[in-house]
Length: 248
Ligand SMILES: [Zn+2]
Image (cartoon, rainbow, N blue to C red; front, side, top):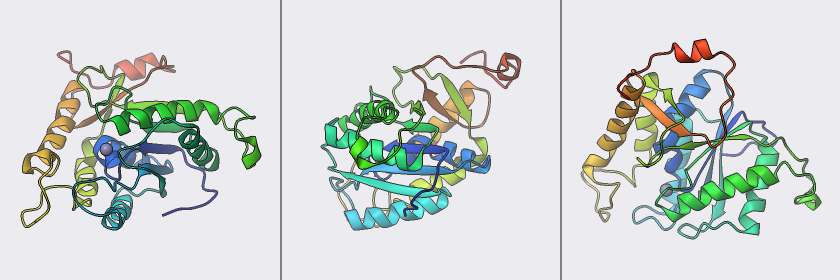
């Protein structure tokens, strides 16, 4: 799914075709319900995956995009398992950012244990900065953009969230979008090799994580984010009188 010249509010950039769903799927649904234009950029087609094929995974990603109500889902076609911060990968990302002009980018955290995820994060941080520099890749003919804000999905317990999004109304939608990647997750009749994420308990763990993050802010479900920069709060009273959990 592509749509040239579509301006996005939010772009989620993750490594493999199911990562955005697993990491920020409910937040993307919430942002869409608030009226924002949302997109996902997958860095690879997931061809290194133990299960499925690139063709199957593309069809699953397209169905998941429909369930997440995305305005666009793009693929940068970097080599799966070999995502590196290079001139080529940075430039490819800069071109997407300049084409879709998102004001907010959601991505992985640099401390993620999967090298593709950590490197995707680095490509995003450098690409977002470079996209704002007029002379970078100038010959390609795209205008520079204002550097988008970046929020990192929190998976590691070593990263303390900067904020947690209340996604209580979007748990089912997120889980449905994850299950659209049917080749990757538990299915009783599957003859494919077992992987960590295709074990029966994995999807339960994803939901427990949503519930746990929700409990930290006193709501039914949450997705956690880390922001490197200081957050600029317009109304501290409104922020600090939202539901919270003193035992978080
Ligand atoms: Zn991944």
